[in-house]
Structures are given as C-alpha cells and as structure tokens.
Length: 297
Image (cartoon, rainbow, N blue to C red; front, top):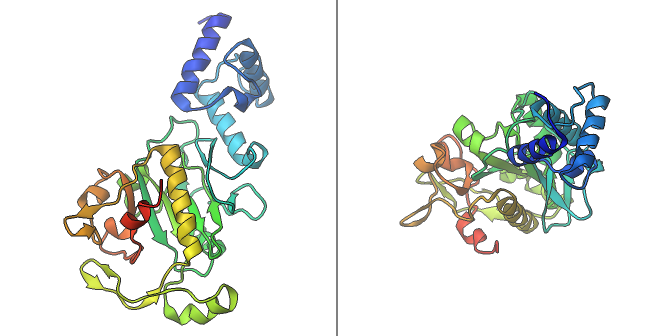
C-alpha cells in the first residue's frame, strides 16, 4: 500500500492514540511531516524499514530504547513512569531504574509489555519486604525470579524498578498481576531486628494489635512515619497516572483484613494489601489503607 504524506500523518496519530507514545519520543513536536521524517531517521538508525510509520515494530524499538535510557528523557522534578511517559509525584526522594543508585528488575522476572497497548491498571497492591533495605529486597526478588514496580526504603526513598507498563510478578495471582501495580515497603518485620534499625535510622514503631484473617498477629515492627508519607505520595501519583480509584476493600465492619473475593478475582478497583489476595500472606498487617486514603487528596 502506498501512503501519501497525509496518510502517514493520520497513521501516526492513530498509532499514538493506540500505544500511548508522543512526537517528542522521536524528537518532533507535532503530528506532521517533520514527525514522519524523524521516525524515518529513527528507523534507519535501528535497521528498520524507513517508511515514517510508527507501527508495532517501530514502537516496540522506541519504547525499549527509551526505557533503557530513561534518565536521558526525564524532565525536571520527581516523576514516576508509565508506558514511557513521566507523571509527577509530590515527593523529593524518587529514584528510577536508570538513575545513579537506582534499582531494577532483571529480564525474566516480569512480563515484558513493550510494544503493546497501554496496560489497563485498576489495582495497587501493598507488600512489606521482610528485608533490611530496598537494595536487599531487589536482590532477593531478582534471585527468586519475581518482581515489583516500586520499593520504599527505610528513609522514605521511593525506587521505581520497572515501568508500570510491564506486568510485575508480585501478587502470586496472574489475574491480579495483570491488573495491578505493586510496592514493597522495607520492613524486616521481626522485633529482633529493632537494634539494627535503632543504630541506623532510629527505632521502628511496634505493632501489637494487628488482626489479619481473623487472628491477632505476633508483635512485630511497623513502618517509619516517613515511609507512610512516601506511600501516600506514591498512591496519589499512581492514581493520577493510571486512574486507580482511591478506595480500599471494605466490609460492614470496616477495612477488610482478610481475603477479599473481588480482589483475588481481579474485580476490585482500588488499593489493597497482599493479604486481601491470599490467606497465605499477612502483609501489610496494621496498614490502615482506608484511613490513609483520606489524606490523599
């Protein structure tokens, strides 16, 4: 099929709407002849057919190149990344995978959605990592061949390890993984580690009354206040980027602290804890999502 310049412009507009890319990915400012020429330059550089059309193969190569060098494209201020695009976050300590000191998920630990239509994200799952730091958590996840999109460290630093476009393997449930974003909040859980924390960051809060799956858990370490503030900032940014509703799974008695059928079947839209997916998990016990969401405005 022979495309006129007008046809190519229309094609690229439709491709952009379908996949979520923008002209500036190719160094252009609008959907016009200049964009067609920039796409042709990009295609020539990467050994693709230089037709000026951003089809699936060109989009996939552009997405991968952008992801591999994401720090080169990041605007001023702090951002999180969804489908190669930057969304602002009101937090002063955010590190993406390509920045100095960043953490990343290795290939083979997640489902790569490069070159596909934007993932429909409707759920956010909170986890604790039972590690002493986010760096340790990332290492453990990579070794186990599982993954997560975000980590929140002891000092409140938010690490983004993976573009939210990709399906992380974090929930132990493929339906939930397909629909969700996940965070691992650093917390070694057991009180025997309190001395370690005290020497480095100060003592952690102690949680002694958390109820999950109908039983009161053993006394354990809680989250630092700065971690909870970082979490709320992350929730708000994900809400604004992906339109995840600012609601938690509830029962007639309040926050659901057990398995929720709407959550594990992927019908729930909002913010939940890992224990809402399976009775085998207890994280994040004591995290009052419903109350915290009231502060996310």
